Length: 350
Ligand code: SAH
Ligand code: SF4
Image (cartoon, rainbow, N blue to C red; front, side, top):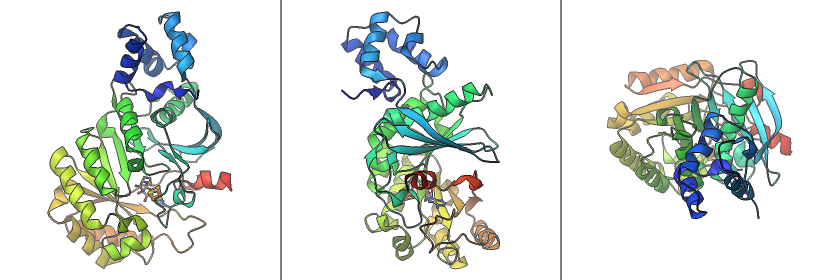
């Protein structure tokens, strides 16, 4: 039997699981306290849990399903972890140090099937979805690293922007978000968690209905279908109007703002007319929308794209601002260490 990670169960799932084996409900609280507060690394350290209960847990679950394969540290403090999964596959997790805290960028799939033309992750098609345990454990491994370094630091933010399309693995992503958010679990507030999708419109409705209250970001990257299809073939299945309809549903139901991500690609989508088209598209939703302009991280295999000039990026930003659109230019983290999503993994595999 392939054992699952102990970090993959939501609190309710663990409670129900223990009860089916005749254990008391409160054991779940004890176990979670050891996992997420005291952050032990083996079942044997859970000294107040009955030995029969520990034995049962050890028979069914493993403590560590991710092993550090490689680590790369950037001058700005960004650390990129390459983890080996139980089946030998490699995934990436990044720890960034923005001004407001410590942010972990997590992976949701081994590879990605969406195949956006600018992305390093899409170069390798999806091998499998990650389990909820493998998603949560990425943050645990990063946190254990911080604990070992005795820096008295905690991961305060999570961005689901690593390798993979989270909405193509929605069920496991939802479970993992519940564990990450739970005040008994990783206790990272919903407002500090952001999930990014390439725009699987049908799943945006489903995600909205879960009422998780975490932030949503949509990788739009182009203001017209013609252009978006050219750079993201998923646009054929979910064109912009379908996405914007789903976004309107999200805004209406959640009362939260939405982020539209827009990579600036030199001479492809960075002209003034594109900024004007983008502001038209946002239209009367501008008070609920943030546009995040992303400097393109060059990927060796995608030589057709270059990063826009700094002046072009600023001009694009100015045009949006003048149209009353909230927008920001994403600060980069760890550019000296293959920061583009999926790059480290694809280079290690090559
Ligand atoms: N699959 C999801 C989440 C992972 S990608 C999605 O596409 O949204 C996270 C973000 O990184 C997306 O906005 C994606 O478009 C962007 N991205 C991918 N490759 C990039 C690159 N080379 N440079 C800059 N951003 C990139
Ligand atoms: Fe997949 Fe996102 Fe990369 Fe597109 S940008 S290939 S959806 S990881």
